[in-house]
Length: 139
Image 1 (spheres, rainbow, N blue to C red):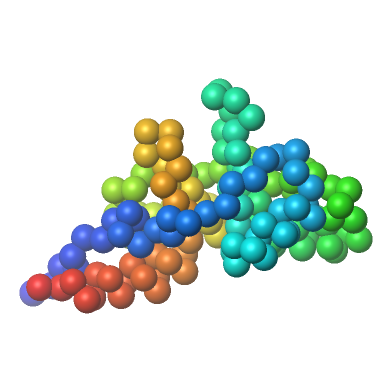
Image 2: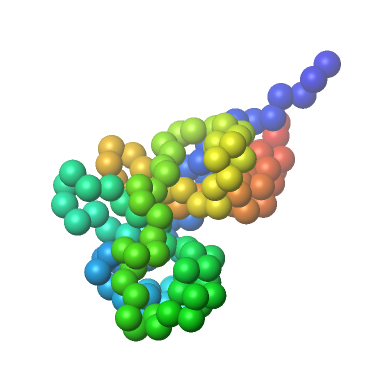
């Protein structure tokens, strides 16, 4: 007889605090915000209603700014960000979200409901919080 794990959704384990930055900001400004918020990712705001959100990751800054010896004060966020950002719905089962991350080699996604950002999700959250949450709440 197989045991069925309790259903855990992205909403249960997502990170709800996130920084929002404009694409026109410099990487230096983004780094200051990342340090202040103690995060390695920022959400890049839409320029207008028909635009899409972007994501700025520390790993992209390392690869595209630091490794190429570019000045963080002379490079804009829009030059480094990933856009459009991949997003998932908050009620998605963490197992499907994990499969999505694996299939597309993602390190972060937005959690969006009705075009409103609720938070971010990462493989670390899916595993460390999601699996643990499911085990704690087994009947």
